[in-house]
Image: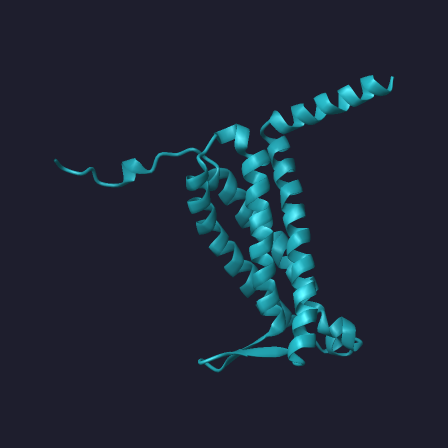
Length: 189
């Protein structure tokens, strides 16, 4: 009975991996969750390490004297790491069988979408954290909770960006095998 169960699980997993529609969406969400775990782990780790290393809540960029909270830098680096995980899993598992797109085209298109995603995540986290920081009741929270409000902001922003931007752009643009040559003028001989 144990071998039959293992075979059934393997068959079910293979079928789930091959189907499109809602199954593709579920695979994309699984990939997104792994990428988010990577992103959040690195963001929280770096935010705390930066605070220990720099001993302040913000860091000023050299030569421009423009200061940003440390969590903004940590969010940016975490988004990059999470994006690498997401692209790798999506290319090898989530969308691979559905569209069969060459790696170099995926990289170019993914980078385009990823830049937008990093901007939306970083700027959105910054804006929401600053907005929440102005709430009177939030200012009365203990220091540790107040210092980590950016984590709550990051969760909200990353969910919105993930559902609205990332999944749709990857599904209809990054992993679709489309020819864009028709949009460029033909060379005359």
